[in-house]
Figure 1 (cartoon, rainbow, N blue to C red):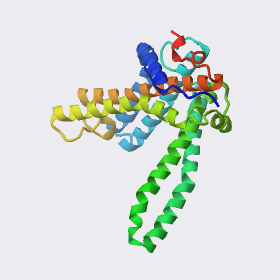
Figure 2: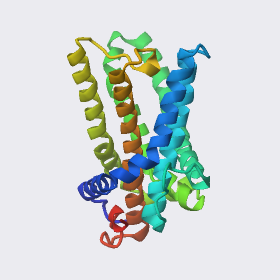
Figure 3: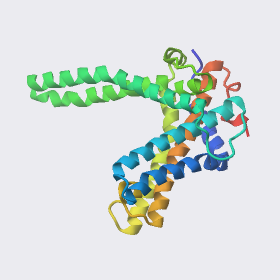
Figure 4: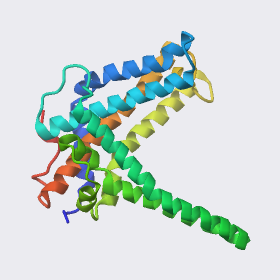
Amino acid sequence: MASPLPVATIVAESWRFVLHHQPVMARLALPWLLAAFAVATLPPRWGLGSIEGWSSVGGFLDFAGMSALGASFVRHIRRGDPWPRLGAPFDAMAARYLLGHLLVGLLVALAGLMPFLLFTLLAVAAREATPLAGLLMLPAGLGLVAVVLWVYGRLAPLPVAAALDGTFAPATTWRRTRGQALRILAIQLGMVLPLVLAAALGVSLVGWLVGEDGVKLPSEGGPFTVGAVLLELALRSLGYAESALTATALTAIGLRLARGTDASAASAPGGRA
């Protein structure tokens, strides 16, 4: 088993790497971001279908673009390939990276399915047996969430391996992440939490400034004003930032787990300019 992953080090190095490459991230994500926003918002305003349907198409484009961006970061960090000039390419590597994430999601869902069914059956039986059954639901529900998160922590690095060499090997990833699930989850939290807080703060601030309880975005059928458009683009851009951060962190995790106990040899993201 590899030595414990240094959570704070990987989080700090990943953020430093991505912040250093903000201009690169912007030019790789911008075409995808603008295309997804246009698809999600313009056709319904021209009477070409429902806002819900086109928002789904825009969401799919965002997902593809984030996968392409993440694969570009993995490629640059691991192989030293030059950055693309404009727009992250959705090539075979990006497709494998996307499929790797889908496979992880599927396996996590399957891992949670049996406990969920068991939890449901026990809940029904307990409710009929005693009125105090409700007291058992909270710990059981928390246990279910813990199982799902633990399985995700064990499988999270899989998309990087899939992107690099087409290895869709959950068993290999599971073996390498033994004893590391909580650390991997903590690293992921360090990537996502600041962006979630930034999004919540931004939406709350805009809502306070305009004197509304909530802000309806253009992709939700809201007003197509300059402020609303900029707000939605900003919120969508956070998703691309999260994709770059996650790819960088998962690459660092994969390097450290593959190379064993020498943390300095597996140091991270930072080796490529």
